[in-house]
Length: 418
Image 1 (cartoon, rainbow, N blue to C red):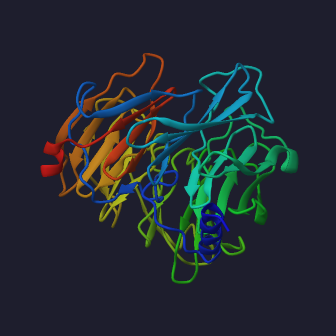
Image 2 (image 1 turned 45 degrees about the vertical axis):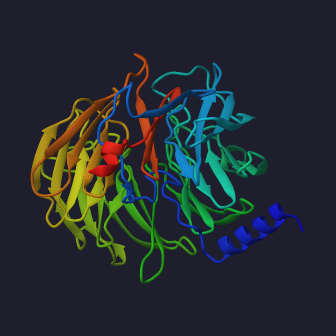
């Protein structure tokens, strides 16, 4: 038996028993909490200082990069009709491209526009490799060398996706499974699949409901659960079999920001006033009245998902205003203007809050206390017709993703000494 076969057997065994090795940024919002580990991270950078490398991508995409070990993975699409699908792997330290996987899209569009998702779903990395979903309905699994392990064509299995803006929901890794939400104008569903072979573990049919949000997987004393915030509703499902546990209706425009939780409350971001809400976890059946914890009176959210840090939840609205609210009752502590609008969800590292604006500016705040304490604003040059869509973090280094480029930022010696 060769070394590679032995490693594969060990990984499959570990995965089957739920023993997934911990990684810092394996999927959308990292571990689902938008929180990095306590490594030294950069505080100040420019185009000339702090940038470890910049690399052009094979295509264009709106997904976030993910990291496993010393590899950065990113997806994109190409062609006048989104007919090409790309997955690229880069060395985290040098930026050297290790491999490129290219596939043909099952479904295409008449023409590409900024109003339609372009490689928006973020992939999931794990011990077996990378799992990537595209809004064409193609779901592929690659090993860490870029070889195809398995693939599925969801539009051929369950029907074509309907809607004017495409899909943006990301894959979510959960132990040895993958979770995928397909909410659109047609028959919608929540799908749970095996990482090893892609086979369906369970599938929950849902009413048509257009949404770009991603599920939140959560461990719990009573068993793991899956939280789904989607246009007009929140649902909690039992992870092992997809059984509905509880739900709440009557929510407006919770269509983009994904839910965030501290284990006691789940916060739903909405772009409509008085619709950003928190619910107490637990209960059974309809909990719209019994478990509503609070409503944020003045807060709205745009593309970034809520970020929870201890007793504070941070929200960003469409105008580029950062708002801090108490987790206890939803009351606003403060708000401050950012140096631009944001698409990417902020990241908490130790006591710092990193906010990545679309225009290449990053505002860093001290997350302690009840007032905004700015630490620095850093600027990177971004092409005029591009923007920062997502960011990943591993071992103290940020990897920003624009539509066409990856940018790695490493801490300096001064940063490490602070």
